[in-house]
Every structure is written in C-alpha cells, then in structure tokens.
Image: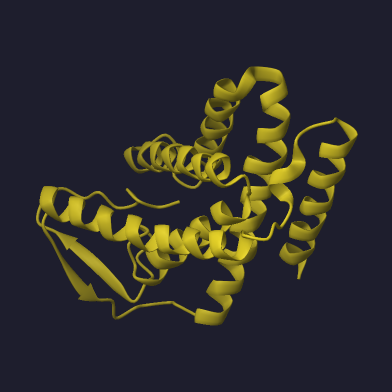
Amino acid sequence: MILAGLVILSYYLNDKFSKKNALNGSILKCKPGSVGQCFGGSILGFLLIGGMWAILYLIYPFDIIRNPVSKIVPVMDIVSYSLGNTLEELLFRGFLLLASVRLFGKTGAVLFVSILFGLFHLPGFGLTKEGLSMAVTTFTMSLLFIAVIYYTGSIWPAVTLHITLNLILHTLGFDGAGQGIFRIELAASDVNGLFSL
C-alpha cells in the first residue's frame, strides 16, 4: 500500500511540478494510442530478453536448470515490480528528466539521468565487479527507456518495458539474485547480474 501511495504521489507531484515550472509534462498524459504503445513496450521487453539471451549464449554457452530453491510469488512479484518500476520511471524519467532538460539540455539530461539511474542500483553491490556490471547495465537500460519516451512521446511504454524486463529476468532467474524458477550455469566465468535492472 505504501508503494502504491508513493506511485500516486509521484505522479501527482510530477504533474504539478511540470505545470508550475512550465516544463513539457505531456509525457505523463495517457493519450489515445497509449494502450497500444504500452503493449508495444511489453513486446519490446520480450524481444530484448530473447536477443540478450541469444547473444549471451553465443559468447558464454549456458544451460538453463530448474532452481530447487525458487522464491517466486507471482502475485506479489507482479504487484511489487509494477509499482516499483512505475515509481522509478516517474522519478527518473519523469521528474528528473523533465527538470534536467532545462538545466543541461536534452543530451546532457539524458546522460545525467542515466548516470543517476546506474548509481541508484549500485548500493546493493558496492564497488565490486557485480556492482559495476549492474551500474553499466542500468545506465544502458535508462538510455533505452528515454529513447522509448522520446520516440513515443509518453512515459507509459517505458514503464511497461521496464516492468516486463524485470519480471521476466526475476521470474526466470536471470537477474543475478538466484531466486527465480530457473538458474543458468555458464560454461565460462560468472556474469551474474549482467542483465539486472
């Protein structure tokens, strides 16, 4: 409930902030094509995961093995990722991106927000190989989310893309946490967390 309240508050503050500061808050609005764009965000998520797995398999062949200690709770995971990823998008690609464009210009804002997003995901890992992998991966994903926003003119396809990516990676066990339905065993060195968002 707290997370749902934060999402609603974040949307409200984003909208209010945009209007008060004469920023282009149109990305927050649901438009006639929003449902199709959101569906497209989910489809893009599935395609990206498939592509990443194919590339990873070509570089580091792996086996997909059923995880005997899976901690997946489908309803809770869907709610948690949906609310959490929506909040992240509203904070980083809503509030911060809108404010940063005015301060740094479009390119500067994209880089600034993406660096912050990468650093935001660092604390759980620290300055380790896994932590830097997580920061670089989330920086890159932030660039993708912003590209989706600029292409569609709406934050909502980026939200569904973010949710889809994280749900697939978490549920299937490819997020580096080792709690999914499956786990991967690499033939080469460990790259756990490489694709975690």
